[in-house]
Length: 397
Image (cartoon, rainbow, N blue to C red; front, side, top):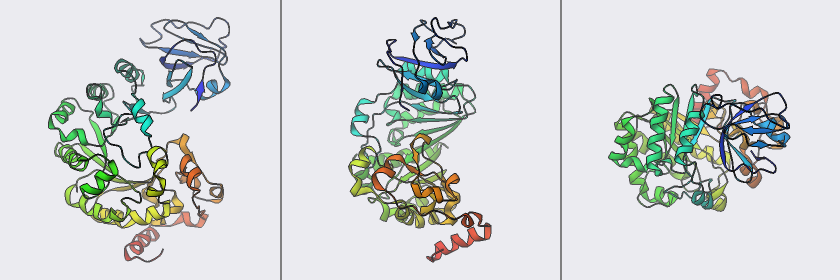
């Protein structure tokens, strides 16, 4: 979302958006301090806006700002007037982004080296204000980075605030898991932990050499596995994430064996297609598998995990790349503003159910698309079971 205020001179702000129908030209109506709830609000009308704290008026307001900002949105505005939406008031799912910095440098990471170096996230008190601005009935919170545990004090403070303020929310923590190899750090988290916490950790290979070559962080395989084991031992739900690339595609069956042997109680295993940005774009030739090839690589691993009672999902896989018997485990996982469809997708009966492609992947790789006919959408349970059976036997469906 690229929004901005023209001729902006009000400084950097974090604010909750409150829309009004009346025009705010000339002298925008002022919010009283008690209406502002103790934190900054932006009163937004069709042609002007003002901040609650100091009545700083902004005019004119671009039509795009009025059309795209919803009541209840939480935004930052930088010194140049560029607007970044942290939370959408239309939803009840929130993202808590703590830092862009990371102690790994994964070769397929969609974040660039520059972004990791320069993106520090909100200041501590601004993060606390953001958490207070969120509606109390938020149903899902994702805590992410970079590696969010690197800002240790803020991370622990954030998790405790979430535990108290959003008691019913499902909380997903995206982390490389290495910090949880330290028992002292884990105990700090457990001291006041969100009740419905799941920790999502990437595991790239069944052995240290390949895993560490992918993370480009020596020792990360040992630390990650110690972290996974420590979390599971404390009864914390763990989701394992496997990003599929040329680097690890041939080793996925062995990785499934490793998971079955060491982590049979894992919550779910998600196989994830590449997003061709950042490091991934830089190393595209060494990494990229098109979606059909990626599915063929994950298929035996998926079946092995399922046979041992472990739940599996596929992220970032368009349905036309996946055998019909596996459509039910595909998730619409791409952030809506990043989703794009190929021209041929217009002829596909499954498009309303398909997660599509990343904008960058579609632009850089020009993937082949095979539209799905309407008749293929009406497989009954017996057809689905037959499809799974044929996949196990190696027959074509």
